[in-house]
Image (cartoon, rainbow, N blue to C red; front, top):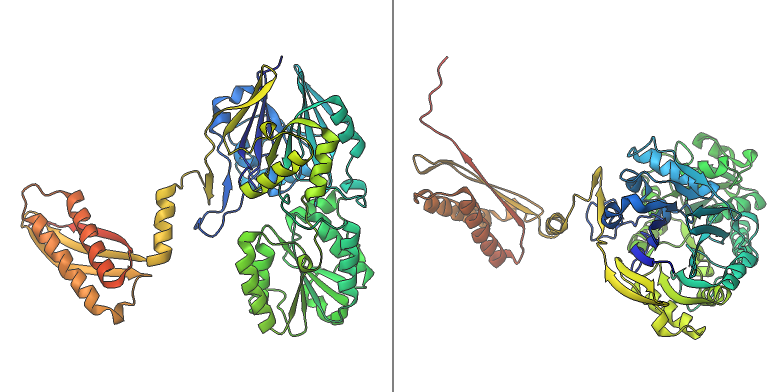
Length: 560
């Protein structure tokens, strides 16, 4: 009997940052290695990645990293992982190409080259365990699910998926392979919950293509499209619709966005050469109804670029009266305010906005019917909903129960929870470290709660600096305190407050200088406490207070 553990180090009770550890005897299999983009409360943070502490403690047991697809939530943390671990990485052709791109651009471990391209026919043997792959449908080509064959049955990880009977070639799901896994016996299923609570089922991508073509053909003005570069399926649909409606495409930026360029090189994305406008100065040669401007980027970048276009601050294309702005992918919840603000700017510029998500339901994640179909095809004994906030995991758990899986066999986990299988039973058996690791510039994990708290306070109430120079031996203040504030009050209109604060600092310093047991830490803390209480009493605000005490010796003589 195999010793089996399943541990999510990221990806449960949150959107993104997917990393799931499956242990079979002495081997550790890492499924995906993704990041998550921060919401507004994490000031200055560029990205959030999983905590690798548990893996570092067991690094000699890691057999490899197995990737399901090429989105940031599945491969974004790989550069940071490979900076610490030297293990093989497995994925489909496009997934590996994008993984290499991420690692190269990070400069963390650019010489790493232990990559292995797999497809749905690949089987990899590890001692008593075999890893298999099956094709799934997502918004990027070459998406794969992963099946780990153990003595107790398969452990299946779906990655991000949906079912679409109209999907073809690089996007089609291998239903027969999934069914065969179910017939072989599935011990546990880890399944995408991103759209588990949706009241509306996805339409087919064929229907999406028809909708995009209809919008383009019924628009007589210039069209500007905002799309996330990693949603290659949607970009292909936009390019197809541009071709069908007789529009030429200009892609903003000096170079093609790296993800699109990679997909083009691998023939995962097609763009006719005669359809491409190669330089911005050639746009004026076409009528407005012959032009489509495509703006791509990561996460919320296309929306932010629209903001610059609407205010006339883009260096290539700005929005003009009559333009139609087509938002081709659904923005995340964290971007809703930004989208609303950008729409206002667009309408003020005389253009209009069309959002695909307002017309049809077209998500890259499985909706309830598809989720239950996956469960029925695989017939797992145990079920673990993953990839989503708690309410999504709970909705998915209820869907699983409707298919006949008892609630005692369903585990809604937190990051770091350990689920073990022994004596023919799966139970939650403990927890490992699984905190967020914050990325800020080149800093990895060096930003903690105290720094984030200070950044929040700076954003809310500003900073108040009190600078004073003393001569400790003569027990006197050499120069009056100097007050500097930023983001707290307008100094010219708050001179009385500044003068009161100056007097308080002088009084505190004099009292501390009079003591024989003068202590630098005590005098600074006294200034902080006294000013904090005074400023809050006067303004109901609590700025960050920084006392700066400088010491001079006025008796010191200098000779040449």
